[in-house]
Image (spheres, one colour):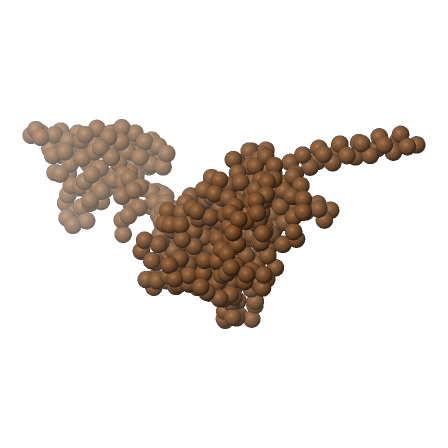
Length: 467
Protein backbone atom coordinates (compact mmCIF):
# COMPACT_ATOMS: atom_id res chain seq x y z
CA UNK A 1 0.00 0.00 0.00
CA UNK A 2 2.84 2.37 0.87
CA UNK A 3 4.47 1.60 -2.48
CA UNK A 4 1.31 2.59 -4.37
CA UNK A 5 1.01 5.82 -2.42
CA UNK A 6 4.65 6.64 -3.15
CA UNK A 7 4.17 6.05 -6.88
CA UNK A 8 1.09 8.28 -6.93
CA UNK A 9 2.95 11.00 -5.02
CA UNK A 10 5.92 10.79 -7.41
CA UNK A 11 3.59 10.93 -10.45
CA UNK A 12 1.80 13.96 -9.00
CA UNK A 13 5.10 15.65 -8.33
CA UNK A 14 6.35 15.05 -11.86
CA UNK A 15 3.08 16.39 -13.26
CA UNK A 16 3.39 19.50 -11.12
CA UNK A 17 6.96 20.08 -12.25
CA UNK A 18 5.86 19.75 -15.88
CA UNK A 19 2.83 21.97 -15.37
CA UNK A 20 4.86 24.74 -13.76
CA UNK A 21 8.07 24.25 -15.77
CA UNK A 22 7.90 27.94 -16.76
CA UNK A 23 7.23 29.06 -13.16
CA UNK A 24 9.88 30.11 -10.65
CA UNK A 25 9.33 30.31 -6.89
CA UNK A 26 9.70 33.79 -5.43
CA UNK A 27 12.74 34.30 -3.15
CA UNK A 28 12.70 32.66 0.26
CA UNK A 29 12.16 34.99 3.21
CA UNK A 30 10.53 37.54 0.91
CA UNK A 31 8.54 40.00 3.05
CA UNK A 32 4.82 40.43 2.42
CA UNK A 33 5.36 44.00 1.24
CA UNK A 34 7.36 44.45 -1.99
CA UNK A 35 7.33 46.04 -5.43
CA UNK A 36 7.76 44.09 -8.66
CA UNK A 37 9.54 45.67 -11.63
CA UNK A 38 12.77 45.48 -13.62
CA UNK A 39 16.21 47.04 -13.77
CA UNK A 40 17.77 48.98 -16.66
CA UNK A 41 18.76 45.68 -18.33
CA UNK A 42 15.15 44.45 -18.11
CA UNK A 43 15.93 41.80 -15.50
CA UNK A 44 12.97 41.07 -13.19
CA UNK A 45 13.41 42.86 -9.92
CA UNK A 46 11.73 42.81 -6.50
CA UNK A 47 12.20 45.90 -4.33
CA UNK A 48 11.75 45.80 -0.59
CA UNK A 49 12.35 48.52 1.99
CA UNK A 50 15.66 46.92 3.00
CA UNK A 51 17.09 45.51 -0.24
CA UNK A 52 16.63 44.32 -3.82
CA UNK A 53 16.12 40.85 -5.32
CA UNK A 54 17.29 40.43 -8.90
CA UNK A 55 16.51 37.50 -11.19
CA UNK A 56 18.83 36.40 -13.98
CA UNK A 57 19.10 32.63 -13.96
CA UNK A 58 18.21 32.59 -10.30
CA UNK A 59 17.35 35.07 -7.58
CA UNK A 60 20.13 37.10 -5.96
CA UNK A 61 19.72 39.55 -3.08
CA UNK A 62 21.50 42.78 -2.18
CA UNK A 63 21.01 44.75 1.02
CA UNK A 64 21.05 48.52 0.62
CA UNK A 65 24.48 49.76 1.59
CA UNK A 66 22.90 53.06 2.45
CA UNK A 67 19.37 54.01 3.38
CA UNK A 68 19.10 57.79 3.45
CA UNK A 69 17.47 59.30 6.54
CA UNK A 70 14.69 61.02 4.62
CA UNK A 71 13.32 57.67 3.47
CA UNK A 72 11.83 57.01 6.91
CA UNK A 73 8.59 58.35 5.46
CA UNK A 74 8.20 55.01 3.66
CA UNK A 75 7.40 53.41 7.00
CA UNK A 76 4.45 55.74 7.51
CA UNK A 77 2.98 55.45 4.02
CA UNK A 78 0.50 52.97 2.60
CA UNK A 79 1.27 49.29 2.19
CA UNK A 80 4.40 48.86 0.06
CA UNK A 81 2.99 47.24 -3.10
CA UNK A 82 2.33 47.96 -6.79
CA UNK A 83 -1.12 49.31 -6.04
CA UNK A 84 0.19 52.09 -3.83
CA UNK A 85 3.47 52.75 -5.63
CA UNK A 86 4.47 52.90 -9.29
CA UNK A 87 7.80 51.57 -10.51
CA UNK A 88 9.51 53.15 -13.52
CA UNK A 89 13.15 53.22 -14.72
CA UNK A 90 15.11 56.25 -15.81
CA UNK A 91 18.67 55.96 -17.15
CA UNK A 92 20.25 55.79 -13.67
CA UNK A 93 17.88 54.12 -11.25
CA UNK A 94 14.47 52.68 -10.56
CA UNK A 95 12.03 55.38 -9.52
CA UNK A 96 9.36 54.60 -6.95
CA UNK A 97 6.49 57.08 -7.27
CA UNK A 98 3.60 57.07 -4.86
CA UNK A 99 0.21 56.58 -6.50
CA UNK A 100 -1.71 59.84 -6.75
CA UNK A 101 1.47 61.89 -7.06
CA UNK A 102 3.87 63.42 -4.59
CA UNK A 103 6.69 61.33 -3.10
CA UNK A 104 9.44 60.03 -5.39
CA UNK A 105 12.19 57.62 -4.35
CA UNK A 106 15.23 56.27 -6.15
CA UNK A 107 16.18 52.62 -5.74
CA UNK A 108 19.45 51.00 -6.84
CA UNK A 109 21.20 47.83 -5.70
CA UNK A 110 23.21 49.97 -3.25
CA UNK A 111 20.77 52.48 -1.86
CA UNK A 112 17.31 53.93 -1.56
CA UNK A 113 16.75 57.64 -1.16
CA UNK A 114 13.99 60.19 -1.41
CA UNK A 115 14.14 62.68 -4.32
CA UNK A 116 11.11 64.91 -3.77
CA UNK A 117 10.26 67.82 -1.51
CA UNK A 118 6.55 67.25 -1.97
CA UNK A 119 3.73 65.69 0.04
CA UNK A 120 1.44 62.75 -0.53
CA UNK A 121 -0.77 64.64 -2.99
CA UNK A 122 -3.52 62.02 -3.53
CA UNK A 123 -4.49 63.97 -6.62
CA UNK A 124 -3.71 61.78 -9.67
CA UNK A 125 -4.66 58.19 -8.81
CA UNK A 126 -4.56 55.81 -11.83
CA UNK A 127 -2.95 58.48 -13.99
CA UNK A 128 -0.86 57.59 -17.04
CA UNK A 129 2.68 57.54 -15.67
CA UNK A 130 5.49 57.68 -18.23
CA UNK A 131 9.02 58.87 -18.99
CA UNK A 132 9.82 61.43 -21.68
CA UNK A 133 13.41 62.59 -22.22
CA UNK A 134 14.37 60.76 -19.00
CA UNK A 135 11.86 62.81 -16.99
CA UNK A 136 8.77 61.52 -15.15
CA UNK A 137 5.29 62.65 -16.19
CA UNK A 138 1.70 61.92 -15.16
CA UNK A 139 -1.34 62.58 -17.32
CA UNK A 140 -4.88 62.65 -15.93
CA UNK A 141 -5.91 60.71 -12.85
CA UNK A 142 -8.47 61.18 -10.12
CA UNK A 143 -8.32 62.98 -6.80
CA UNK A 144 -10.41 65.19 -4.53
CA UNK A 145 -13.63 64.25 -6.35
CA UNK A 146 -12.47 65.38 -9.81
CA UNK A 147 -10.93 63.78 -12.88
CA UNK A 148 -7.81 65.58 -14.10
CA UNK A 149 -7.25 66.78 -17.67
CA UNK A 150 -3.70 68.06 -17.25
CA UNK A 151 -0.11 66.78 -17.35
CA UNK A 152 2.37 67.14 -14.50
CA UNK A 153 6.11 66.49 -14.51
CA UNK A 154 8.60 65.88 -11.70
CA UNK A 155 11.25 68.61 -11.57
CA UNK A 156 14.36 67.03 -10.04
CA UNK A 157 15.90 70.44 -9.35
CA UNK A 158 13.04 71.53 -7.07
CA UNK A 159 11.73 68.14 -6.01
CA UNK A 160 8.22 69.25 -6.94
CA UNK A 161 5.58 68.17 -9.46
CA UNK A 162 4.94 71.01 -11.90
CA UNK A 163 2.13 71.59 -14.42
CA UNK A 164 3.11 71.18 -18.07
CA UNK A 165 2.19 74.21 -20.18
CA UNK A 166 -0.50 73.39 -22.75
CA UNK A 167 -1.06 75.65 -25.77
CA UNK A 168 -4.11 73.91 -27.15
CA UNK A 169 -7.69 74.95 -27.91
CA UNK A 170 -8.68 71.29 -27.71
CA UNK A 171 -8.29 69.75 -24.26
CA UNK A 172 -9.76 66.24 -23.76
CA UNK A 173 -12.00 65.40 -20.82
CA UNK A 174 -10.32 64.49 -17.56
CA UNK A 175 -9.96 60.73 -16.94
CA UNK A 176 -8.20 57.93 -15.12
CA UNK A 177 -7.19 54.36 -16.15
CA UNK A 178 -6.49 55.40 -19.74
CA UNK A 179 -4.49 53.27 -22.18
CA UNK A 180 -1.41 55.27 -23.14
CA UNK A 181 2.02 55.08 -24.71
CA UNK A 182 4.82 57.56 -25.49
CA UNK A 183 6.70 57.50 -28.80
CA UNK A 184 7.94 59.95 -31.43
CA UNK A 185 7.54 62.94 -29.06
CA UNK A 186 3.86 62.17 -28.58
CA UNK A 187 1.79 60.79 -25.72
CA UNK A 188 -0.97 58.66 -27.29
CA UNK A 189 -4.07 58.24 -25.14
CA UNK A 190 -7.04 55.96 -25.73
CA UNK A 191 -10.20 55.75 -23.64
CA UNK A 192 -10.11 55.60 -19.87
CA UNK A 193 -12.99 56.34 -17.53
CA UNK A 194 -14.70 59.29 -15.87
CA UNK A 195 -18.08 60.45 -14.56
CA UNK A 196 -19.73 62.81 -17.09
CA UNK A 197 -21.20 65.97 -15.54
CA UNK A 198 -24.30 65.76 -17.73
CA UNK A 199 -25.00 62.14 -16.72
CA UNK A 200 -25.96 60.36 -13.54
CA UNK A 201 -23.70 57.46 -14.53
CA UNK A 202 -20.47 57.00 -12.61
CA UNK A 203 -17.05 55.85 -13.86
CA UNK A 204 -18.14 55.14 -17.43
CA UNK A 205 -15.73 54.20 -20.26
CA UNK A 206 -14.68 56.89 -22.73
CA UNK A 207 -14.33 56.25 -26.46
CA UNK A 208 -12.03 59.03 -27.62
CA UNK A 209 -8.53 58.84 -29.07
CA UNK A 210 -5.92 61.62 -29.13
CA UNK A 211 -2.28 62.48 -28.55
CA UNK A 212 -0.31 65.22 -26.83
CA UNK A 213 2.43 66.69 -29.01
CA UNK A 214 5.34 67.61 -26.72
CA UNK A 215 7.09 69.64 -29.42
CA UNK A 216 4.09 71.94 -29.93
CA UNK A 217 2.49 71.55 -26.46
CA UNK A 218 -0.87 70.69 -28.06
CA UNK A 219 -3.49 67.99 -27.83
CA UNK A 220 -4.57 66.59 -31.21
CA UNK A 221 -7.94 64.87 -31.53
CA UNK A 222 -7.92 61.59 -33.49
CA UNK A 223 -11.67 61.01 -33.22
CA UNK A 224 -13.63 58.22 -31.59
CA UNK A 225 -12.34 54.71 -30.94
CA UNK A 226 -13.52 51.57 -32.67
CA UNK A 227 -16.24 49.94 -30.55
CA UNK A 228 -14.83 46.49 -31.41
CA UNK A 229 -11.61 47.10 -29.44
CA UNK A 230 -11.51 44.45 -26.67
CA UNK A 231 -10.54 46.96 -23.96
CA UNK A 232 -10.42 50.73 -23.48
CA UNK A 233 -9.27 50.72 -19.86
CA UNK A 234 -5.76 50.09 -18.56
CA UNK A 235 -4.68 47.53 -16.00
CA UNK A 236 -1.41 47.34 -14.07
CA UNK A 237 -0.29 44.24 -15.99
CA UNK A 238 1.08 46.10 -18.98
CA UNK A 239 4.35 45.80 -20.85
CA UNK A 240 6.20 47.10 -23.94
CA UNK A 241 6.58 44.57 -26.78
CA UNK A 242 8.50 45.68 -29.87
CA UNK A 243 7.87 49.34 -28.94
CA UNK A 244 4.12 48.69 -28.67
CA UNK A 245 2.02 48.87 -25.51
CA UNK A 246 0.49 45.54 -24.46
CA UNK A 247 -2.03 44.65 -21.76
CA UNK A 248 -2.44 41.15 -20.29
CA UNK A 249 -5.40 39.36 -18.78
CA UNK A 250 -6.11 35.75 -17.84
CA UNK A 251 -7.27 34.80 -21.33
CA UNK A 252 -5.67 37.35 -23.64
CA UNK A 253 -2.99 39.82 -24.52
CA UNK A 254 -3.89 42.99 -26.41
CA UNK A 255 -1.19 44.91 -28.28
CA UNK A 256 -1.67 48.53 -29.37
CA UNK A 257 0.21 49.96 -32.35
CA UNK A 258 -0.60 53.66 -32.18
CA UNK A 259 1.54 54.54 -35.21
CA UNK A 260 -0.32 52.11 -37.51
CA UNK A 261 -3.67 52.75 -35.78
CA UNK A 262 -4.19 49.04 -35.07
CA UNK A 263 -4.84 46.83 -32.06
CA UNK A 264 -4.13 43.09 -32.14
CA UNK A 265 -5.83 40.70 -29.75
CA UNK A 266 -4.54 37.20 -28.94
CA UNK A 267 -7.16 35.19 -27.07
CA UNK A 268 -6.63 31.71 -25.64
CA UNK A 269 -8.32 30.23 -22.60
CA UNK A 270 -6.18 30.55 -19.45
CA UNK A 271 -3.13 31.65 -21.46
CA UNK A 272 -2.04 33.70 -18.43
CA UNK A 273 -3.98 31.76 -15.83
CA UNK A 274 -3.49 33.05 -12.33
CA UNK A 275 -1.80 36.30 -13.37
CA UNK A 276 -1.80 38.91 -10.62
CA UNK A 277 -3.29 41.89 -12.45
CA UNK A 278 -2.17 44.25 -9.70
CA UNK A 279 1.47 43.94 -10.78
CA UNK A 280 3.31 45.05 -13.93
CA UNK A 281 4.83 42.68 -16.51
CA UNK A 282 8.51 42.55 -17.50
CA UNK A 283 9.84 41.83 -21.01
CA UNK A 284 13.35 40.39 -20.99
CA UNK A 285 14.86 38.92 -24.17
CA UNK A 286 11.42 38.34 -25.73
CA UNK A 287 10.13 36.52 -22.68
CA UNK A 288 7.40 37.96 -20.48
CA UNK A 289 7.80 37.66 -16.70
CA UNK A 290 4.85 38.25 -14.38
CA UNK A 291 3.63 37.37 -10.90
CA UNK A 292 0.98 34.65 -10.75
CA UNK A 293 -0.97 33.12 -7.91
CA UNK A 294 -1.52 29.34 -7.85
CA UNK A 295 -3.34 27.90 -4.85
CA UNK A 296 -2.34 30.94 -2.76
CA UNK A 297 1.26 30.38 -3.78
CA UNK A 298 2.89 33.29 -5.65
CA UNK A 299 5.30 32.44 -8.46
CA UNK A 300 7.31 34.24 -11.14
CA UNK A 301 5.87 32.98 -14.44
CA UNK A 302 7.56 33.05 -17.84
CA UNK A 303 5.92 33.28 -21.25
CA UNK A 304 7.94 33.27 -24.51
CA UNK A 305 6.50 35.92 -26.85
CA UNK A 306 7.02 33.56 -29.82
CA UNK A 307 4.29 31.34 -28.34
CA UNK A 308 1.80 33.94 -29.57
CA UNK A 309 2.46 32.61 -33.09
CA UNK A 310 0.39 29.56 -32.14
CA UNK A 311 -2.67 31.76 -31.61
CA UNK A 312 -4.66 33.23 -34.47
CA UNK A 313 -4.95 36.94 -33.72
CA UNK A 314 -7.72 39.40 -34.46
CA UNK A 315 -6.77 42.87 -35.64
CA UNK A 316 -8.91 46.00 -35.34
CA UNK A 317 -8.38 49.64 -36.17
CA UNK A 318 -8.02 51.82 -33.10
CA UNK A 319 -9.90 54.80 -34.47
CA UNK A 320 -13.48 54.54 -35.65
CA UNK A 321 -13.53 54.45 -39.46
CA UNK A 322 -16.52 56.70 -39.97
CA UNK A 323 -17.74 57.23 -43.49
CA UNK A 324 -16.43 60.55 -44.73
CA UNK A 325 -19.04 63.16 -45.80
CA UNK A 326 -17.92 63.21 -49.42
CA UNK A 327 -18.65 59.48 -49.64
CA UNK A 328 -22.25 60.14 -48.63
CA UNK A 329 -22.55 62.90 -51.20
CA UNK A 330 -21.06 60.62 -53.82
CA UNK A 331 -23.48 57.81 -52.92
CA UNK A 332 -26.49 60.17 -53.16
CA UNK A 333 -25.26 61.58 -56.47
CA UNK A 334 -24.62 58.11 -57.86
CA UNK A 335 -28.10 56.93 -56.82
CA UNK A 336 -29.69 60.00 -58.43
CA UNK A 337 -27.67 59.44 -61.62
CA UNK A 338 -28.72 55.79 -61.81
CA UNK A 339 -32.37 56.78 -61.37
CA UNK A 340 -32.01 59.41 -64.12
CA UNK A 341 -30.35 56.91 -66.47
CA UNK A 342 -33.09 54.35 -65.82
CA UNK A 343 -35.79 56.95 -66.45
CA UNK A 344 -34.15 58.18 -69.64
CA UNK A 345 -33.62 54.62 -70.83
CA UNK A 346 -37.34 53.91 -70.62
CA UNK A 347 -38.06 57.28 -72.25
CA UNK A 348 -35.57 56.48 -74.99
CA UNK A 349 -37.29 53.19 -75.71
CA UNK A 350 -40.65 54.94 -75.90
CA UNK A 351 -39.08 57.60 -78.10
CA UNK A 352 -37.82 54.96 -80.55
CA UNK A 353 -41.06 53.00 -80.61
CA UNK A 354 -42.80 53.43 -83.99
CA UNK A 355 -40.05 55.65 -85.41
CA UNK A 356 -38.24 55.00 -88.69
CA UNK A 357 -34.64 55.91 -88.00
CA UNK A 358 -31.75 56.57 -90.28
CA UNK A 359 -28.05 57.28 -90.22
CA UNK A 360 -25.46 57.81 -92.93
CA UNK A 361 -25.92 54.32 -94.39
CA UNK A 362 -29.07 52.56 -93.19
CA UNK A 363 -32.75 52.72 -92.30
CA UNK A 364 -33.87 51.22 -88.97
CA UNK A 365 -37.15 50.16 -87.44
CA UNK A 366 -37.14 48.27 -84.13
CA UNK A 367 -34.68 45.40 -84.69
CA UNK A 368 -34.71 45.63 -88.53
CA UNK A 369 -32.47 47.64 -90.82
CA UNK A 370 -31.57 48.03 -94.49
CA UNK A 371 -28.93 49.78 -96.57
CA UNK A 372 -29.93 52.88 -98.53
CA UNK A 373 -28.27 54.70 -101.41
CA UNK A 374 -26.92 58.21 -101.18
CA UNK A 375 -29.89 59.62 -103.13
CA UNK A 376 -32.41 57.69 -101.05
CA UNK A 377 -30.74 59.11 -97.93
CA UNK A 378 -31.13 62.65 -99.31
CA UNK A 379 -34.87 62.05 -99.75
CA UNK A 380 -35.18 60.64 -96.21
CA UNK A 381 -33.32 63.62 -94.74
CA UNK A 382 -35.66 65.98 -96.61
CA UNK A 383 -38.77 64.14 -95.41
CA UNK A 384 -37.49 64.33 -91.80
CA UNK A 385 -37.59 68.13 -91.96
CA UNK A 386 -40.77 68.34 -94.03
CA UNK A 387 -43.39 65.65 -94.30
CA UNK A 388 -43.55 66.00 -98.10
CA UNK A 389 -41.37 66.88 -101.12
CA UNK A 390 -42.36 68.52 -104.40
CA UNK A 391 -41.79 66.96 -107.78
CA UNK A 392 -39.21 69.55 -108.75
CA UNK A 393 -37.29 69.05 -105.49
CA UNK A 394 -37.35 65.32 -105.97
CA UNK A 395 -36.10 65.75 -109.55
CA UNK A 396 -32.97 67.52 -108.31
CA UNK A 397 -32.27 64.61 -105.97
CA UNK A 398 -32.76 61.99 -108.70
CA UNK A 399 -30.61 63.65 -111.36
CA UNK A 400 -28.84 66.88 -112.20
CA UNK A 401 -29.50 66.34 -115.89
CA UNK A 402 -32.27 67.96 -117.89
CA UNK A 403 -34.97 65.47 -118.93
CA UNK A 404 -38.35 65.88 -120.49
CA UNK A 405 -41.28 65.96 -118.11
CA UNK A 406 -42.53 62.46 -118.98
CA UNK A 407 -39.09 60.94 -118.42
CA UNK A 408 -38.77 62.58 -114.97
CA UNK A 409 -42.20 61.25 -114.10
CA UNK A 410 -41.01 57.71 -114.87
CA UNK A 411 -37.77 58.22 -112.86
CA UNK A 412 -39.69 59.52 -109.86
CA UNK A 413 -42.14 56.61 -109.98
CA UNK A 414 -39.29 54.07 -110.06
CA UNK A 415 -37.34 55.92 -107.35
CA UNK A 416 -40.32 56.11 -104.97
CA UNK A 417 -41.20 52.48 -105.65
CA UNK A 418 -37.67 51.34 -104.73
CA UNK A 419 -37.58 53.23 -101.47
CA UNK A 420 -41.09 52.05 -100.58
CA UNK A 421 -39.90 48.47 -101.00
CA UNK A 422 -37.09 49.17 -98.53
CA UNK A 423 -39.50 50.83 -96.06
CA UNK A 424 -41.94 47.89 -96.31
CA UNK A 425 -39.19 45.35 -95.64
CA UNK A 426 -37.89 47.26 -92.64
CA UNK A 427 -41.25 48.14 -91.04
CA UNK A 428 -43.15 44.96 -92.06
CA UNK A 429 -45.82 47.28 -93.45
CA UNK A 430 -47.75 46.23 -96.62
CA UNK A 431 -48.79 49.72 -97.65
CA UNK A 432 -46.59 52.32 -99.29
CA UNK A 433 -45.24 54.78 -96.75
CA UNK A 434 -44.41 57.40 -99.38
CA UNK A 435 -47.40 58.40 -101.48
CA UNK A 436 -48.00 60.74 -104.39
CA UNK A 437 -50.68 63.33 -103.52
CA UNK A 438 -51.80 66.76 -104.66
CA UNK A 439 -49.99 69.72 -103.14
CA UNK A 440 -52.20 71.03 -100.28
CA UNK A 441 -51.16 74.58 -101.18
CA UNK A 442 -51.66 74.29 -104.94
CA UNK A 443 -53.78 71.45 -106.30
CA UNK A 444 -52.24 71.81 -109.76
CA UNK A 445 -49.03 70.19 -108.57
CA UNK A 446 -48.11 66.83 -107.09
CA UNK A 447 -46.04 66.17 -104.00
CA UNK A 448 -44.73 63.04 -102.28
CA UNK A 449 -45.71 62.60 -98.64
CA UNK A 450 -44.41 60.12 -96.04
CA UNK A 451 -46.95 58.45 -93.78
CA UNK A 452 -44.56 57.50 -90.99
CA UNK A 453 -42.53 59.25 -88.29
CA UNK A 454 -38.95 59.46 -89.37
CA UNK A 455 -35.94 60.69 -87.40
CA UNK A 456 -32.18 60.64 -87.45
CA UNK A 457 -30.77 57.90 -85.25
CA UNK A 458 -29.48 59.42 -81.98
CA UNK A 459 -26.91 57.87 -79.58
CA UNK A 460 -28.31 57.16 -76.12
CA UNK A 461 -25.67 59.31 -74.36
CA UNK A 462 -26.69 62.44 -76.26
CA UNK A 463 -30.36 61.65 -75.58
CA UNK A 464 -29.53 61.04 -71.89
CA UNK A 465 -28.51 64.63 -71.20
CA UNK A 466 -30.92 66.30 -73.60
CA UNK A 467 -33.39 68.49 -71.75
